[in-house]
Image 1 (cartoon, one colour):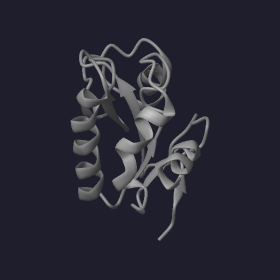
Image 2 (tube, one colour; image 1 turned 60 degrees about the vertical axis):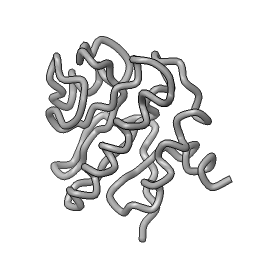
Image 3 (cartoon, one colour; image 1 turned 180 degrees about the vertical axis):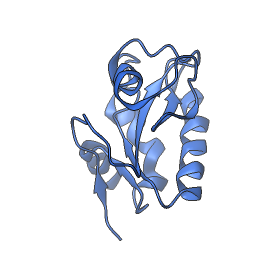
Length: 129
């Protein structure tokens, strides 16, 4: 089993890689990683949840941690169903949405050992503490 770490900056993707970013429910990708997803990786304007382009959108702007958790769970289910893809999870919710790494990282605990999901190194450290 390979423990994968998301690079700090992603400017290109291989055909089997998926850019996982924090979005808003309306799919207005105006800033942060959402804007990168839109400009570089084909995220569609107006799609704020799930697969879009060579990306996967997880909404983080609609409330607290409890409103994000079901979308992360849906993502983990989706990643399990697509083992042929490598999902590069960015620090969703830790930019414009204003959450801390300590708040978001535990949501990805069940993904830490998945061969096809890379998470930020800081989140790995938090989860393994």
